[in-house]
Length: 430
Image 1 (spheres, rainbow, N blue to C red):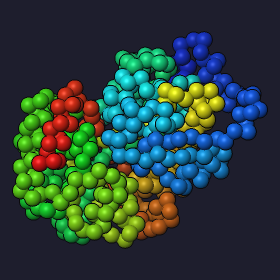
Image 2 (cartoon, rainbow, N blue to C red; image 1 turned 45 degrees about the vertical axis):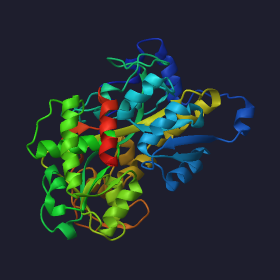
Image 3 (cartoon, rainbow, N blue to C red; image 1 turned 90 degrees about the vertical axis):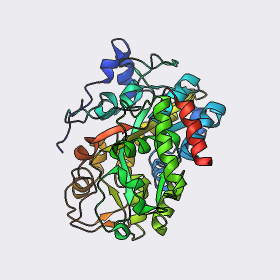
Image 4 (cartoon, rainbow, N blue to C red; image 1 turned 90 degrees about the horizontal axis):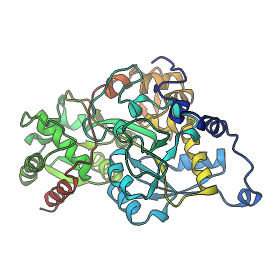
């Protein structure tokens, strides 16, 4: 992958400011905003961070504390419970880490604040996956579902409406994203797996699992339906009621036949299912595959011919965050994009939203393995130092361009979301 120049998104802070605000943007971006009252410097630098466990790490909290003096207090919840907390308890957190598909629920509530692009030092270097729906090399990727570019901007600082074009106000400052697929136990399956339809193959009866997060699970189910040749959706990410009924019927029949061992809701559940061998094929997230491998157990994040289901997450603020607390939040977000955290998450199989800073914090052989799909020149270690792959191994799915270039859809909130969630919950409870 070639080193990218300053403006990789085709957007810049000056572009979004349109005039007089540019000076303020330069001041914020350069760290020129100083002179807080002395009492502020004496107050503890603490941020309450609400999110799933995906980006939460003791290593990250220790590093940000060392670099900035900010203490991060994690509030961990499942994806659905994060959304519920934002709606019902907006004063209970400062920084929100959430997925882009959740924004269709969260932005209209008025309980989160968009972030000011002029205060984000690396805004110009955010990958165009978010702003334009394409790779840095210009390749346009699939956008069925809630692709980030559809919900990236709002009309103003306190707006509850998505903008049709670029503005200064960003719904989420992106942090990480990935192209997800199925995880498998190759040592137990012992044959090639090439299609999403294998999730419902009777060969794996009682050994398959799908995740119990409706907005994500429905997309995995749709990938299975299309791969099985049962139906071709005009837009998997925005189904009609009839399409939802058909999709859930396929899942329900599989459940009745005993296909599924479990329906997991969090990271640790998925790791335990695969580590124990209770499942051999399931919906999975890349760091969960990493976690299984660090136990010395074979686990593959399997590339599939129909492509990947993608997701992305980022930071915004609670509507209650103002003054000194807001400045701390921006300091934390800028630190997160400065490279150490991005490299840390890249080593778990994620992709950083700002690739140049992550690259600068990785060894060349690590970058070549994780991002360029090249055989590892040295042993590949997880963030905790445990062995992931021995020298000579190549990453599942190949390079960044190969994986992200094969995105078929994104996690989604549909127009018929309430109906879909009701049908999904009936399926789980049946």
